[in-house]
Image (cartoon, rainbow over all chains, first blue to last red; front, side, top):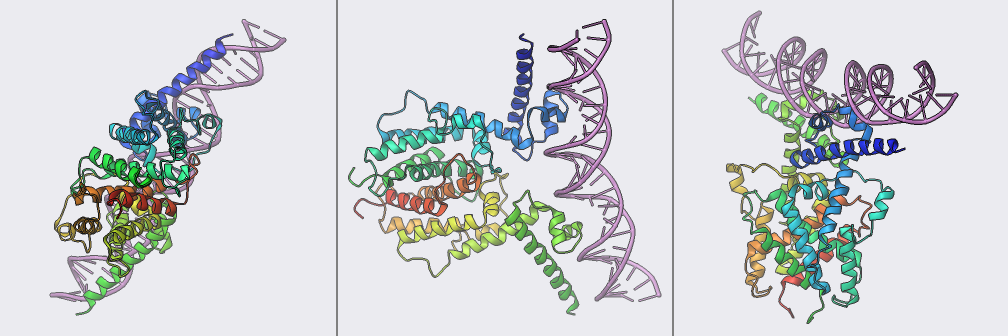
Length: 211
Length: 211
DNA sequence: TTCGTAACGTAACGTTGTTAACTAAACAAC
DNA sequence: GTTGTTTAGTTAACAACGTTACGTTACGAA
């Protein structure tokens, strides 16, 4: 009968309520600022009810990250994506920076908060390396195409290394902006100007001379 | 009499013992992993004794940061600092990355954790903009020299903007390493390899063609 | 000798993540 | 319809945390 399925569905609904409440709190309070009791209070459950659905606080955090990663990867499935590999890299970088600026709290949660190495479960293996849902895989694929099209200098053949470097470049702009944009020590230039220069400089530094 | 000075000296010695014990623990355990009780136990004092010397845990950590960042600025006053502006920029970047790898917890607190806008007091104004103690000012000065020596393309004249971009580039390598280096999602290349490529690419992207 | 100061200890408070033990309701089997 | 089983959720509690109130003890000044 459908009773079993209804039970499963009801449990998932509760799980989602927890996730939604937790996201709100994590985004506004940060990882350390969130307590299991606050999450529970927000959905009017007892604190321990959360442990029926999640192993512990870290697990809850990890599940949230998964969802937000997927949302980022979706942005790359845009029809505006250029065909030329170099312009495609620039577009990826720009889109990524815009994502980080538009959702600074999501970004902080995903890429600026160290957390213990998460175990990869079977669900993860469906995502991992799939460019349609894994943003890093998409970058790497585009990078490989650029390498194959001989856009770059001869010694630059490692798509993994190049991807990590381009990622680090744009990540540097975003994360420095999030952590330090109100710091009076530095006379900051507008963040998009910094981002555009970064992409320009890095891509120039990668390509063959005269190309 | 010298008794007063002896008392002050003895207090400073205790303070240093706390700082030394705390540094060891912070580096091996990370900020959250360190407890006041562990620090106290290491120097065979009661946990509350620490509060005679420091306001709270964050104050203790912050004092440590001060010391180690002063050390960073000192490294830039090294005799090993190259004369050539471009090589000097590379050296600054490399030194900065090495620092971030050696003191990940300090780095995390200072550059990866959004702070409420810090008030500038009088002591800060002695540091601000002084290249001998302000690492960013030193970078900017070096950048201006490189601009004056016409190392870069003609349209790149804003030392502030260029400094922020170079800083963001190395910061990206360090902070991504700190936040995500144990993440099994990415097949990371060695961090120093990523740093060297980053510096290479960024400097190439800045300089005049054929130079 | 008395008094004040200041470094340090003891005990405790409120909060945290988490667990053990229980409750209550729904379902399956007879 | 009475069982037994499963399970989402609760209550109470634990150990560990940062921190504070308050007591103690040593010592220089008067």
